[in-house]
Image (cartoon, rainbow, N blue to C red):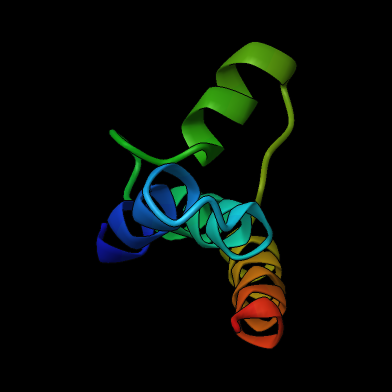
Length: 70
């Protein structure tokens, strides 16, 4: 959850969208089912995201955020 708050802070306060958006998406991907995006993807679009896909995608988003920090 801290990643999401940090991502929102970077987007809203710092106006750093390149780092903020990947942090926020990574937080949504690895969050548990009541908060996360995996359940919504399964219910709305009938796409099942396995835990490995979510972890790999979140890791790539964190890498993008890390490389784009000033």
